[in-house]
Length: 88
Image (cartoon, helix red, strand yellow):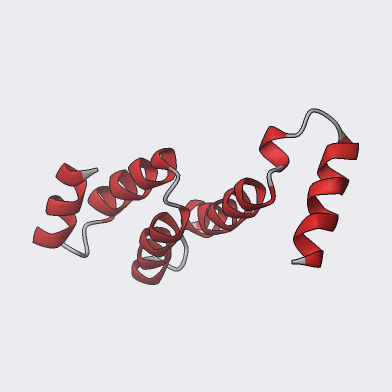
């Protein structure tokens, strides 16, 4: 992650550096920062549908992790986790 971070700092408009950084952040579970990188790529190239898709995927992964759905063994556990999150 650190190498990509340095590369992006040196050349913040390089799509390949941003892509590598976003992928590394996503693998690490830092979905907010990964989404920000994908957003920057999309701003540089609005025709980049992969970047747009990855922004959505980052949001989805964050939601799944936050809700505990990735740890559920059944849909009943997902429902219980949702109900607990709604109650606060």
